[in-house]
Image 1 (tube, one colour):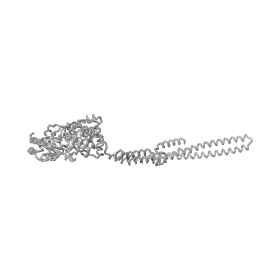
Image 2: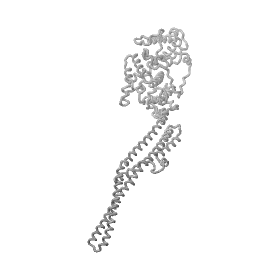
Image 3: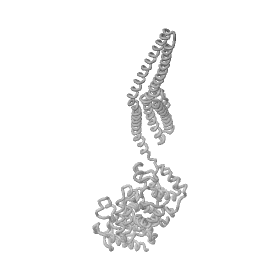
Image 4: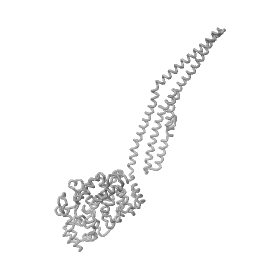
Length: 564
């Protein structure tokens, strides 16, 4: 019994120390004194100070309210524990068992009293036998006998009471043990209710978190960034392209010359904040180019996708130029939608950058060398240097033709200022602006396979043909402002080896893939009688060969008309 009392007492003491509220206090006072309540008040006050414009403020306010509800649940839980577990356990350890132990002590005392009365009675009996005053001794012995019998009755009564109490205790041992079952049940109920509170508030707080678009873009997956920002083109990609279009197109060694580390870090941090206030970075195109390369490199999966890495490598290994372009087009068409959209945006910009290669020295080959490893890499373990060395040759062979033939791979026009957050660069006005009015922009009219320099005469040749629909001879015999413009521009570009059009027209997309939306981007048919689109441009025959011969004839006619 004593052991049960000690164990129960220690358990009660430790359980009380686990309570966060003051035992015995009223519910309201107990709630105010809980640490969770203090935390809740601090969070709510902090959220109010930060305001609704701060995500931290919003989160602190919502969390503060949740902590207050958790404090209420804890207060109710502790009240229940105090009532159903602590009080009965205290009754057992401090009242019931001590009463039984007192009965045992009382019984021991009564037994001693009985033994003393009996000893006195035995002594009186002996005195009667050896004494002379027999009558007086006999009367005394009778009194002692009554005293002994009374003591014996008390012992018996105490023994019966003690036995009854002990039997009652053991019969209730199941009830006492149930206190601990009640404890666990109460804890389980408390945690369930607390979990309900958390589950109810988590969707709200998660929705606020997801609705906050100002999240880091660097190092975040492309799909995740586009989804949470509601964009079509990644913000770092659009921001860097727009800044470079305005101030970086003539910068020598763009993407090759490293930028200052502090400036680059600052720009990346600004882009992670989704800010459009980037005026200070316009003057440092190398930092902008470095940020763009860094964004591409830090993507968890390359823009050109792990999934079709082997297919890219296989396509780049095709020896025949026509078939290699065809294979690259097929692989490119397999890119996921978001990857393809952002790759098209980037490639169109890089193609535009390559048009100024005489100034910026960034030909499609050079761009592919410095930027290609940031667009595609193998999903293998190893250092960055090892990965780059293993894939650099193949990547250049993949990226260079895509940039060189950007309008064939991606025939759709691209609006670089997709979000409208950035100001488009203002084109320099000159006396040739009427050309855009007459036959459209050079970008739009350039045949899909001819991604040459800005001053390449080929785009104007096709522009004339599509606008006036006349024969090359009629153009030769009728020099006008367009032919003069062509001569002025063409005279400075015929010697560019890296940007002159290839000796072959890139093959048309496969017939079975035209239903996927690429038919609009086919190379225009220049022959009088259109050839079937599925005809292959091998051996110098087919519509591509006729286009090339017409282009050469038209150039010769224009040169003859201009006397050059």
